[in-house]
View: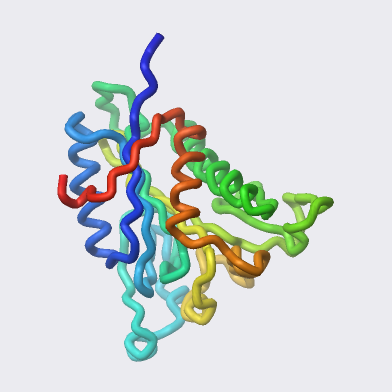
Length: 250
């Protein structure tokens, strides 16, 4: 019987986007050659817009002057998806894990494996929200996690085809030539909603972005939610989770 593989997870607090990106790149390079275990980085960013490979310039609504006034940085990045916002009050997760088997040397991961990874991230967030009584689900043909307006209460029901669903979490990833993941997900806990006005979120017109604070009188502190989400990550991806408080020092 094979031993369960370990995955390190870390709560990094608030760190800049470029710092987190450099940390991802370093760890991913080490994961690819077997010098670092699979890793889940959990953190929050200062006000940031990221534009994925499918982003359109017109989806960035605030110009440079407006962004400077609001203290928000914008970055073009190599993940999938369109444009999104990261900021205080949002839990960001960067899984850095190998999806390909050892010795894999193909050009790209099979599409089925890529889609399965996305679906697992959605299930991870759905399970984490359920801990707090928020009923969430996935929408066919769209990436991310969605919540119906009546998402709390003992008799609340989830209708994946409802037109009034709200988006509570975004997902955008990259899988490199070694089959190692980058980027990840962003779950809205209690962010400043003002910053969604500066973009067309995920390139979707009229999407309503919501947070846990819209459904809970007292949303959980980010470190507490990070710990419970890390436990769910271990269950979804079949890892034994171990906490590492100082991944940058490795």
